[in-house]
Length: 215
Image 1 (tube, rainbow, N blue to C red):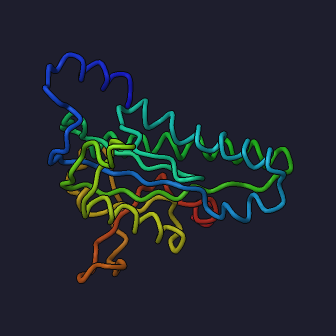
Image 2 (image 1 turned 45 degrees about the horizontal axis):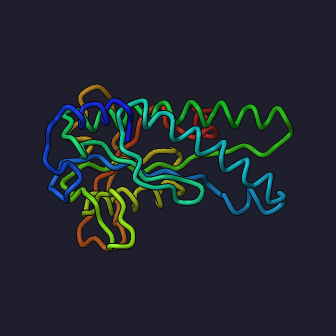
């Protein structure tokens, strides 16, 4: 949890701030495009260093923008805004973090290219909506996480980012709440597990390098 959020929790006097509760959250899920290809020719030590460096590009912006780091997923992470404490502008904060992540990953990728290494691309899915956030698990181990349809949609959006010339795919829940960011309408898509098409968006700044070159 971001230090600023920890400070607010300490001042909140809530009886059990980590107990599962309904929250309006924005979930961000990110990972490295083509991770298996990136590491297949590396030593274990080199792969570990690449993973650490990449995760640093993702983690800093999340915490800088008061996000809650849910978990690392090998070459990526899951984070959310709006829990354990409610945040009115959770969608915009997630998008702020997204822009920082894009810049850091692109700088890291350029550095790698200058060193004769393969470039990197990040894939990000973002959606806002109601979720249950709190401590989940067993008596042996529990984690603070968020579960719900909006979290599942964010995961699906991250997965389909590989099919678009944008590094970020955003759901309509986030688009409806965003106040500080102009989003691009990309159309509708059928997501796995959904019965109706989902309207998706991106950000002008999220155009992949090849698309930016063409435009």
